[in-house]
Image 1 (cartoon, rainbow, N blue to C red):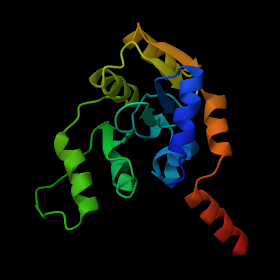
Image 2: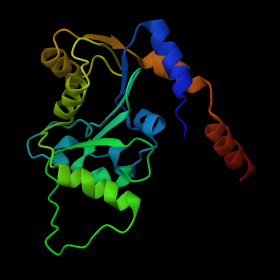
Image 3: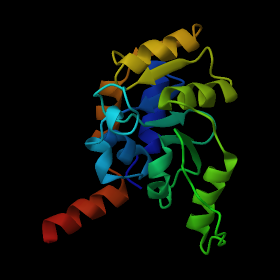
Length: 193
């Protein structure tokens, strides 16, 4: 795991942040181990006709208390099979055709199937994020958001009027400065290659 959870908690406590939300594909990968190569290139209008030309938005959620969560487009959820985060939420239409049946063969396939069968009805990633925060009792939390100036920040603020949204870009950078053993191992291996 790349994510330095202990350092993140320490910095969150110092900054008075209850929950940290990353928004960029790079930091979502850092925080959850989820990766999909197309996330950094896929525009909203490519999946949702008439939508913006912004990137398809995902979120990684790390609260001081409780499990971490991941929000991804339903079409990309299979890429979450190997991440350490178990609480995966989707948005958009899955368009999953399971008419031929076929039981999942591995634990990872079962995890993906469970997400599909949960049948979440979130139209947008922000809807899914707001639902996660509400379900965890974080409606009035101090939220550290990677990009507190993005359009989704306004939606979050409108949906959670008692919450306090803070810019957490520097907190994320400071967390990433201290490497975990796994990250050191990967950097060492890359240098050897």
